[in-house]
Length: 121
Image 1: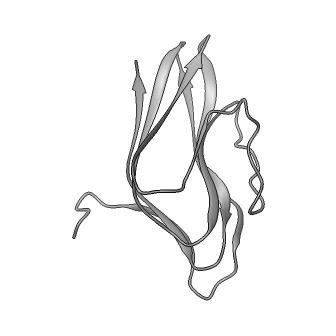
Image 2 (image 1 turned 135 degrees about the vertical axis):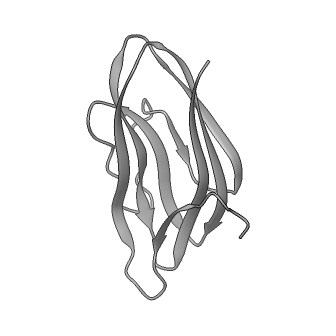
């Protein structure tokens, strides 16, 4: 009832195994420019290593364990706290990108997101 427009929920269910390199992604073509991603994170429960990423090409990086990280050149936000979160990235030319979530969730953990925006500045 607190999120009437719905939630995107990613979880490693209670009593289930960890999720290793779980991914949810979308392909897009964006023109050159400066961009900001805004994520409205409503809950982060348990221990996880999950990122929202913007990668060039048609794949997201592999996040297959609790300490795995994407390449430092990949614009990303690592989920850690609830609230409005954002990060910026720049495309020098029109580019095919993959955006989305990639990560590792220990059992009994979840992340809830109520909104995602891609803003061209």
